[in-house]
Image 1: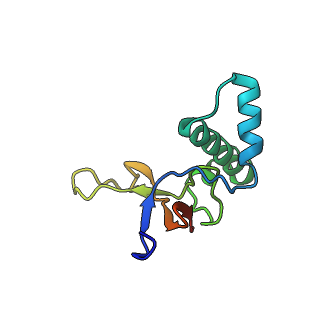
Image 2: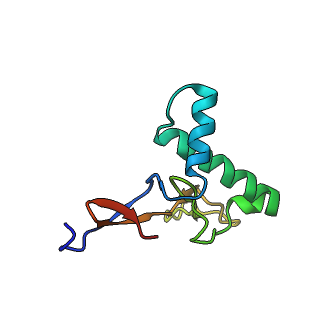
Image 3: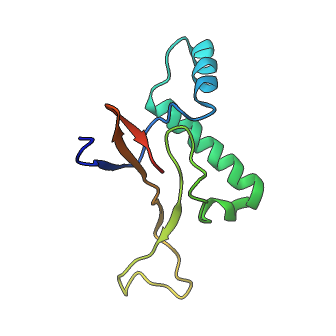
Length: 118
């Protein structure tokens, strides 16, 4: 796989090299007496992202584009509105149907393991 220069795109991947990884894992284990799984890391990332976005920009911070370097321990957020293509559903105000996360992570297979490239 290394010779193939394999890259994978994933929406979530626990970055064990992140500066806060060991701290989060230790505190989580001390509090709940279990090793955190992917859901725990993603929940932590989501709550941290939401708190930062709201404290900096209010409600508008939840729908503004994030910097691509602002990833959490397992995921990142790049929220974008999705509008209807249907003429019947379009309104004068052009209200989005929903918001989607367009954030992905790129992994590269190096030295017998996947490593986060960006």
